[in-house]
Length: 256
Ligand SMILES: NC(=O)c1ccc[n+]([C@@H]2O[C@H](COP(=O)([O-])OP(=O)(O)OC[C@H]3O[C@@H](n4cnc5c(N)ncnc54)[C@H](O)[C@@H]3O)[C@@H](O)[C@H]2O)c1
Image (cartoon, rainbow, N blue to C red; front, side, top):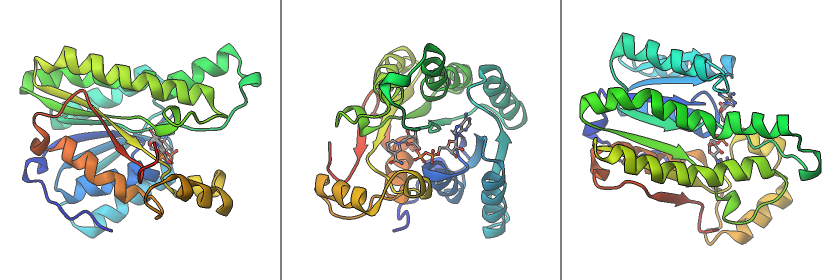
């Protein structure tokens, strides 16, 4: 499946994606670039991110895509990356808060330090990226922010309480920021993927038996892939969704 819709309103838009170097984020980086947007992403996966930029630039010389190495747990580094992009290219129009980590952990082993570290990756950067891009969006007269949630809390998934709690909190963050920023014509929405079969998921967690179980749970009996999540994000970034805000959009093959 490839993205079939082209959104004229995304052309030349400045898009900032966290974790845009691999997994669903890489599919988003490629898709926004192919929409002729001006795409900037941060990630810690340096070789994968450089390879992605090189391959997109090879695909078309006018593709405008850049990568900055940045660990988003470091709020100052995240702010600096956003300021640098805005100084060079202008205010960000679309923010995609995609990066996260769903490392499994047993509730018995969670320490306060581990809990704080998971929040520093899976929740805190989403807010501070919003705080950093909002002034530019306000000055520009609007913008679109897409936060990545997860079906994990809706389906009562176990074995990673700090991740699941952070992902549930993102729904509250989306709704409160949609209220605060709506007066400036900035839309804030959550996209909620189901069990998306990225290479990492297949390598680390999902066995053939797990995948059979996932498809038993889904109404649709096909493998959910990053390309299935991308069209919803493009739509929410584009002017076509001009009156959609404070909502959550589930792409899970009909599980939760
Ligand atoms: N894949 C799924 O099944 C699934 C299900 C539900 C929700 N989601 C959500 O979708 C989003 C993308 O998921 P994914 O499966 O592609 O994740 P992933 O782990 O494959 O990729 C996330 C990206 O973020 C980057 N990253 C990780 N830690 C970082 C850090 N400290 N600083 C900067 N970048 C960092 C990674 O290098 C990677 O490129 C996440 O928010 C995830 O919670 C995914």
